Image (cartoon, rainbow over all chains, first blue to last red):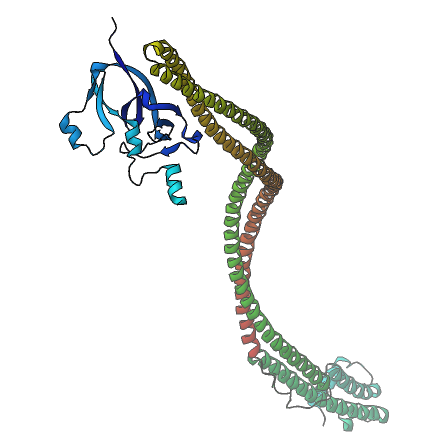
Length: 139
Length: 418
């Protein structure tokens, strides 16, 4: 009998690799292909990408999609549920952002598990958000 | 005045003819007296006289008287003749004395004056005077000639001395000239050898320059080929560059497709994962597709890198080709300049070679001429030595001539003419 697994998407921002639930991801595309309604989030608490090569389109609660610009999308992994763990309370308490929900053990190494809707909602103040900033500029 | 001798002789003659008759005896005595007187006269004795008183015969008496007159006249004439002879002898003695005095004392200043005057001496006096005048003229002329001779001898001596000195200097100069000509002969020989060496080197230089000209022409041909090859390489590089650009475009398309394939595979894997267990196989296939796409992208990345390297290499090759073209053009230009220079060198070397040959020929002629001059100088030196000896002899002769002229002048001075 096979072990129950969780599907996560691994991506890279800067030098670090992060993990996110595949259900929070609507699709993956190129930042240059982003439509007007796909608001680009090029900066977040994860840092700025070195070379914005991919965009992760995230479905938000408000019904709009936002595109998190990352350096690289590594792929999809099926991780045993036991290897996906919440943050220790102290660590969660110390963190400012609520986007980090836990970590997943990948090859016995912890990888931060990111709640993408929360991340794009919390986008770092001053960070570039193409369409959103454009809207602000327009306002 | 009757001469006793004539009477005695007449008596002796009467005794010798004692046998004559008386009449004839007296006459005979008278004739004997006259004959005796005539004998005396014939013997050159004119002092005796016939005693006319003793002669009776008128005819004989007249004869005796005439004889006596003749004897007296003859005696007078004889006396006069003796006086004249004495005067003439005195004049001759005085003339001889004057001549001796002239010879001994050389005094020709005065005129001949004799203590006697006789017409017979006039020619002698005139002759002696003429002789003295002639001698005076001769002495005067000889004195002048001696003076001139002395002067000339002095001049000849001076000239001979000068000539001897000049001859000595000339001999010395000729000796030095001969030595110099000997050195010049050696130098001429050296110059001839050097000129021959220069001619030989000029010939070698000419040959080397011609060889260099051929090499430069070959170099220019090579430069032209290099330039043509550089142009061909440039064309090939341009074609290669265009092909590479075309490959780059194709690779960009492939890369774009691979990127799209990667995205598609990624989204397929995402959708498979969203489908849970049911989509796992799909996700695996999608992952495999994505791996292929990534391989393609890796390959295109490598191709891009290679294209970049090829571009850089092509650019470098293009620059090198341009450099080759430029250098080939510069090489052709320099080759042209070198050909011009080499032609100038050829011309100059040819002229140098010709000039060296001419110099060699001239120096050979010069050497021959110098040897002839040396030979001539040796002969001149010998002649000059002989001339020097002759000059010394001439100086000695001139000195002797001067002495003789002085002696002659001294001798002539002994004659007074003024």
